[in-house]
Image 1: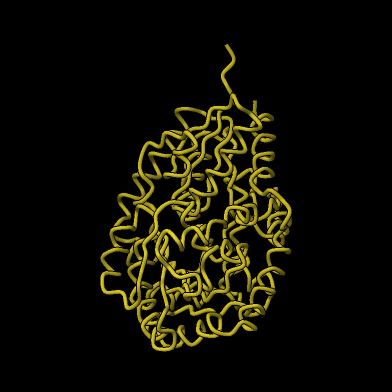
Image 2: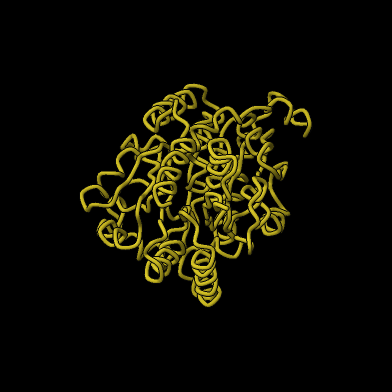
Length: 386
């Protein structure tokens, strides 16, 4: 009996889990009989994946966060690689989480070069350490890129790469239900609503929530009827609730993807940790301010390696500061509030940023289904391997 086409996926954090879930949905449409195995979070599990450990412990970043967990992380890397070597899938799709997944790929390639390895989401080689493309050729067979300017970095070193587009673009239709969300939460239709998104990793929530609280307290002085919604994910929900217990404005903590996208639809503006969510907000047309804080030591090292001016995808694609960015957010609450205030109170300022967001989304491939394109490439490589 012929073994079914077997595709292994590995995602290590919520943004990768969302990518993996969308990819799985497309794979099931294109190859209903394919066997999908590996590691993922709630979104991928909802698509039928039986994950052999929870991914919450992998969503770490920054020196202070990573070092105490090194032993656990290396044990998980070995566990994922051993699972691939034991099951021998037709292809392994390693989704985002570069530091973790690249080490997994090296382990698999060293032990069994016949297993095809795809990296879904290019590391930011255009931002720092461009020499990584040459090294990645030794342990990967293909890279699926979200940004149009990424494939040439790989092509010039002989590593096949495909621009599939940003999956967040295909999620535009999900940003609905804003009026119903406001009504259900008892938020007046004309109340100013700020969507607060301090991140999906514990260190992000820990570092950014106090800064975001300071910014909201400052905004409340100018906007007395300000209300906040905060979509969160299971692995940080407890931390979010603890850190927002004394929030200076009415706050509604939301769970689940539907409420998150409804919050985008309902919000007048957003304050977000830099990451995938800023692209999702751009697709939904939500004016925003982006912030980040890796801690002083990691930031100091990171700045020495950077070759770019911006951290958000919108600003990178446009090559101008359409979204106000605060890379070292600690102590910047008042400045962040000052950047948010016109987006909440000045219709012209909000409209100007929305126009910039639409331009950036267009450049990301606004009419393409990135997950379907990614699934096509994955299946081509998997079937060729058989």
